[in-house]
View (cartoon, rainbow, N blue to C red):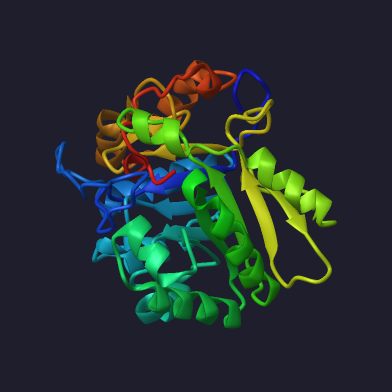
Amino acid sequence: MDRFGRRFEYLRLSITDVCNFKCQYCLPDGYQCESPRAFLSVDELRLIVESFAKMGTKKVRITGGEPSLRKDLIQIIRQTAAVPGIEQVAITTNGFKLERDLDAWVEAGLTSLNVSVDSVDPRQFMQITGDGRLQSILNGVSKAIDMGLQVKLNAVLLRSLSQSQVPEFLAFVKHHNVTLRFIELMQTGDNQAYFDSEHLSGADIEKQLQDMQWQRKTKAQWAGPAKVYRHNDYQGRIGLIMPYSKDFCADCNRLRISSLGKLHLCLFAEKGLDLRPKIAESLKAGDPTILMQEIQSLMGQKEATHYLDEGYTGATQHLAMLGG
């Protein structure tokens, strides 16, 4: 828990910051190797999950960059699922390996899946992401639904595309049992001009849903920050992630570890807090309490809010750094 009484049972664990897509809002020029690529090892990742589980964490989401670019992803999923106390293992992916590798991920212990799908129109998807594999990604989504996984699709809400984006996604969720979450574009260190031209408040979409008789769902345990709506005539649901809305941070329930071993108390925190020295000490001593004590002491630095509404972006240069 932090000093504001918030309980953190959800860890977002980045295993790489590399991504192979060129999304307009994140890496329009593609991945640039701007930092050492000494990503957390399998042993370091295991220790981190074990330490968080001993402190009450029950859900781990594996993120990137694009996590499926790591060749040892299946091993990471399996060892995460095997940690006592971990009840859910999720992954956030761009889906380019989804159709091929989903069976192996589920066999290893994956329980839920988030896929970034910024459009269900192939041309528009290519325009946004620079990738032409939409059909394969959607095939993988359908496969995941058939396997009984909890499936969420993430779409960044863009002003220039909203007139076509919203109706197309509404048509999609009418016949697919997924939760489609519209995510407000967030200002980062390198996207000021793009943010100014493309940011659209999710409140506009929320008003449309309410006018169409969509009803707000009760938030589930360990759920993320989305406000989720459902409609009796639709198989799927619509979620809205609106980080600029009032009290967005009031029920924050997740912490983040970067692929370089830094604890991020907030996606938009001033800087990551380096855990690598304590990770090394814990591994050498075979004692996770060394790392656990460090994490607990650092929790005192967590702020009440992210101050995004004041134009603060912290150390987040682009969203691939932490996978959102």
